[in-house]
Image (cartoon, rainbow, N blue to C red):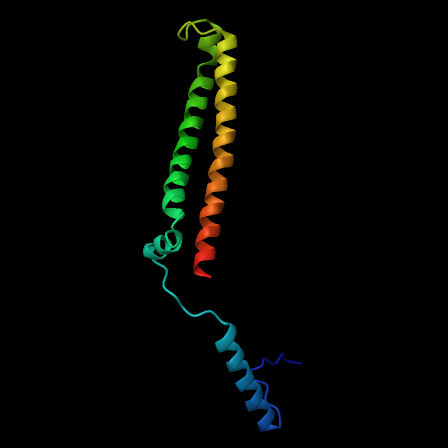
Length: 131
């Protein structure tokens, strides 16, 4: 038995078929999203729709940058482990080396928490201001 779709299936009662199509059209107009062109300007309008985001958005971008810089410093210091072990890295001993490493890890974690908190606040403020 072939599968019949809603478009190919015709009932004997023409009145029911046309009223069903009308209901589908009404539901489609009501619930389907309209085609909207998304441009970079759409994103700036979204994020800058709240006055608080004028401060939070640059702060969030700065935190994104600082997290990458912190991670780069951590990898740079980690790559010099053998030189620190040999005592050839600025005269640094192991204790100072591990203090620096732990400070970088702690600051990286703190920057990540604050960064994502600010990003969530930006999105929530923007969403609340447009709804």
